[in-house]
Image (cartoon, rainbow, N blue to C red; front, side, top):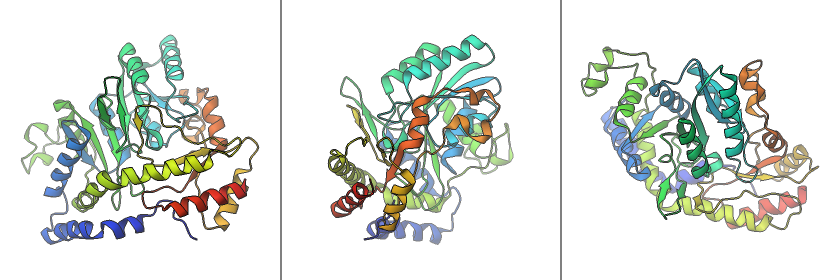
Length: 390
């Protein structure tokens, strides 16, 4: 049996008719940049998430950078980022001139640790070298961050809360009153990625920004197209009247068409299916001594971008991966290196973080295949071979 880590071919077979129809429509119209499908997608996603504005862009990394630029984050600012996450969460603040300050994560959810965050904020304030400005709270592996705790800290210190929903799109948080908040609606501003392997992915690169702020939405649209005049966005010549420095970051019409073709199945079928897969994994792995399965907290709903276990102490991760590969099962390690020891931050204030949980996770995590089209028999096969390898 050969297992795919994220089976995009099987998914395409399922959505082929709708996706092919959308692609053909774009090609026939020959409106490849800023075609009507882009606006349709933005409205569809804004309605789904529950915010006023969705601004599409070229990728998830640009989305974070644009969001920070729109809020004036730059030189002399401190931006607090989880130490256990993908590189762009810290790269983007640094690109704007700010200093990423890495904080530890919670062992059970892999998301930002509120206590570590507050300690890092207080340390920066005491140093008086940087101005605390923003928090990048990542919905890692599909589950929203600890919303009440992180929001309270941001309000206490008057910090921008940027929700990095690159892995969390489709997830949600239900508050104490019973109100559900979709991922990408939780922060002051939010971003996501449509990289093919993400919960909702296109067939190339793509990203989006979500906000309820009319002015910030205009700024984001301007920055994404070379800083064009935000007062005359519908004027075809507006892009030649550049009133600020920006970048070239547009979602092309073909990718918007792909996402429109996939969206209904993602919403109505795939989220429930991938949650079934995750629940089956956790049930079958519950009897493995020393192995830790991922935890979804009360009130949280995960879109399961990854299914990440922690191996028992002393387990030989490389040998386990090799054995599973021999059985046709791919595995990955997200993430093998803490952010604060990445070479790009060597010798900077960013490298001074103390994040013991992250350091332990980087040595023990292993990501198993997960996607909505994984069958129960395939899950059982993966678990059987993992137990054998252990």
